[in-house]
Structure formats: C-alpha cells, structure tokens
Length: 131
Image 1 (cartoon, rainbow, N blue to C red):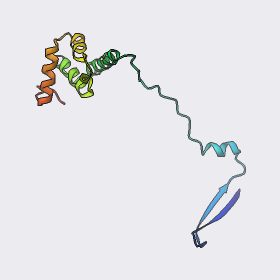
Image 2 (image 1 turned 90 degrees about the horizontal axis):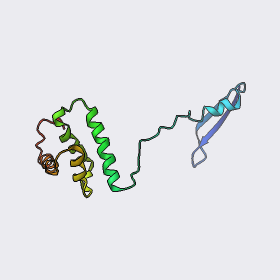
Image 3 (image 1 turned 45 degrees about the horizontal axis):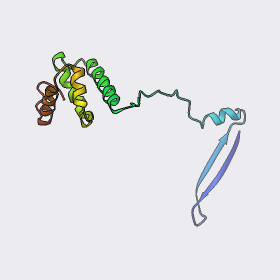
Image 4 (image 1 turned 120 degrees about the vertical axis):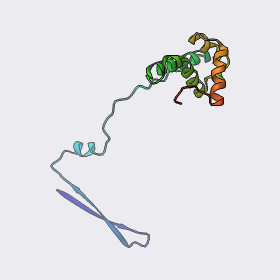
C-alpha cells in the first residue's frame, strides 16, 4: 500500500484542504486503469434511413406510421386511417408537395377524405380518438 497526501491551497497559499490518494501495489496497473475507463457498450444501430428523394421520404414515413398505428391496439380498425393521417399531420408530412395524393393512394381513400381528416384535426373534432 502506498499513500500520497497533497495540500490544496487557495490564492493566498493558505491550506484549505487535503487530497489523499491510496494505491494498492498488489493490484496490476492495467486493472487500476480499467476502473477509470467506462465499460464498453455495444453500439445500437439506429433505424435511420436516408431517403434518396422527397417521394421516398414520404413513402418511408407513411410505411413507418402505418406499422406504428397497426401495432397500437388501442386504435380501432375503423379509426386506423384517421389515426395514420393524424400522425402524419403531426410529423408535418403534408407540408411536402403531393404528399396528400401519396397518402390517399396508399390508404385507398380519396384525397378529399385526407383533407377532411386534416380539417377535423385542426378544428379539434377527432371523433373517438384518444389524442
């Protein structure tokens, strides 16, 4: 065992504290150093996909949102399309040109229905949705 004590001084060189370091010489140096290094954590692959075009971005976001809503058991089958449109609206996907047509085609509804859902969300008339 080896100990070192260091005096901590202020600007006036007056001792205001002591720092004591104790070291066990029986422990290998590599083990001592490993206590200062954080443990390795496996890298998590993030599911970030970069779209090659705006249409791909809309399609990826739409597919992800459909999977998300279909996995949510609290959304009834009758309200799934409405919830998908709400989620896409909250993500700002309808700020992209022609996104409404893509969403309508994928959900097999008219673009007028998508506009209706958006108007209802803006007015606060969700009809049976929790959000």
